[in-house]
Length: 242
Ligand code: SF4
Image (cartoon, rainbow, N blue to C red; front, side, top):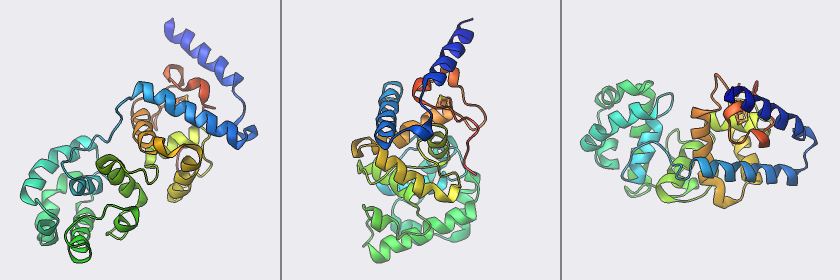
């Protein structure tokens, strides 16, 4: 009964919302900021679910998290960081041995290569210290803006952009905050979100949208009837990154 009432309420609010296509940029900004304010109430301390002790550990954990759950990565990293405690240790790791060490995270050969090559660049170009800027991180092997934003935002508190993974991309589409649908256009989605949100919200917004995408607006089902931003969202539920 309560669920039916909530559904009806959400449908009424949906009808009342102004179509995204007619929104001015200022209206869209206002709506995006209101969405983030609402998410802040639901996920006040939103942060990455990956465990780490140093920015470099978060870099490695983020590389391992591609196509893998954070829980699985968190099972692997304690032993991994005990065995390879520094960038130097990863740089001189035996490729096959490291690949086996991270096998359970999937795509382990690609990931082993990315970690070893990145660690080598850190040792050879950055004196063994992980770079702490977007520009520096992008020089590492296979590190995208998404990975760099995860590390800079969560480990160093630096707002250099908005993390756009598949959850953030899907939610931005469904919320009418971007029109870029292709996965390869993630950086354009990021630019849209950076334009709509104040810098102080960039780190939180990425982390909170990921949590919201995991528990409410999932790829399989958008649970609009129980969603805390239903009245602020055009509910373009058929949109997913392609
Ligand atoms: S669950 Fe529905 S209302 Fe909530 S963000 Fe997703 S599409 Fe919008």
